[in-house]
Image (cartoon, rainbow over all chains, first blue to last red):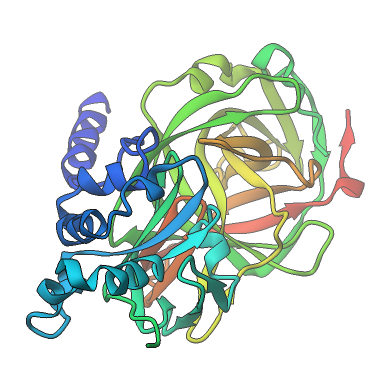
Length: 163
Length: 225
């Protein structure tokens, strides 16, 4: 019996590769947590270009719907490079703050909402569609990455506020 | 409620007699998560007792539980408690026995943490009650049947409410008298997938097979011996 148990434990240990173990982000700000995750390289570059890193690292709790690198790659060719230009900083700030909601809103509470006001000033739509959580037309693909000053939900598309 | 005395984190010997309400449409089934989640949380068996950390992995099972003092059902994701930890070490398996339908059981160590889950339906989230308990499923061992010594043991888990802490969030016990008994049933293959949200985030699971029948333990039908 002990041998069977030992084998079972080994199988479990192998199968959890890539699983989220413990909390490596709890002591980090949302910006710092994003910097430590290669999936957010484009987002971090954008936050730094917009000069928002300090503002999003304060004590106020925030919820970030964070587009990963693949999400940015879905934008038209050249769009990211254009946004990162200094002369487009205001537009970039507008886009990025449209992904941030004041307060710490975990996924279990996000799904109870139909909309939320962003730091940009306008609302994002929240819905459940086909068993998936949608923010506007983006899907939440990972939820509840806990950070010192809030929580990150990963989305698969960049949210664009109305002009 | 079955009198489970947890003084000094030890379950004291109690004898309870239960009558149970079978809920044919309820039950727990085995699932396979698209992505396995592993984490540490803290639980306290009752007010005044310290939180103790446990490691969990899953979800391994999913169930629909009848509501406590409400007709609204609650969905639960079941996370297997793994590894050696302070909670397991603090509980002495031999300390509690109870009696049900003439059978004697012994409550062993907790095997699963059950956390309320919201099911993501086609166009809405089925959240269930906001104040649903977090539960611990204690393994049951069955002593020789008083009725039929050859009858194989069926009862597998007793689920009771616990306080739980996850980072800065504390989930208090809303309904301390709400308990459930899980009995093994013949396994039947299941199909389909379920998307859920619980305190640990999004979980996409594939339904594999039926596992346990669920019975609630109403307080009014319980008495101490």
